[in-house]
Length: 220
Image (cartoon, rainbow, N blue to C red):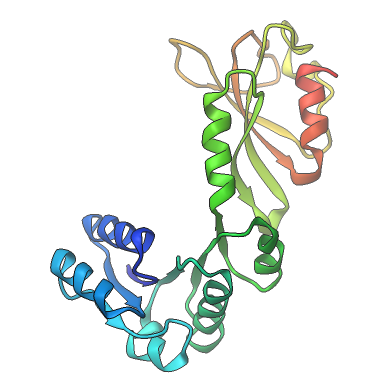
């Protein structure tokens, strides 16, 4: 794919390097000449000096043929504007924006940004995965469907232990999809499977029913 990256800071640089290693064609747009020189010395001629929010700069970058534009500057407003220009002026099919302030996420969704990466949430999810007492971890948000993919760890005192999936009082729209057990291959979460202590369950649930799902599996 041809991917335009807005922002040549640490995130943009390492993202560009990773994309190149995967065989993608990339162009990094960066305002500061010193960053352009640094990236060019390491990655070659994959940089364009300019403001990624401007139509003329994206035109020079060939945004009209881009498969994706990713804006990862440290400024949320710049990331939003760059993605808006790409979508509405150059019809880029996929846009991804880095969000530094979690309060801005809803605005980005309403304005049609395809994917948002909330730095705070990413760090929190990593922390949650390392805390054994934390029962539910977010894996993915499906914004268009209003759904979350979550991982649920079943503790010893959970009300669901010893019960079949079909007997659980799951909230409407919630689906248990996969069960992972120590030293076993992943299991499809069929209705007759009995929940065991330590099960790690992958589930899809509407975003407003996460608490109900936790209660159904663990209890109050």
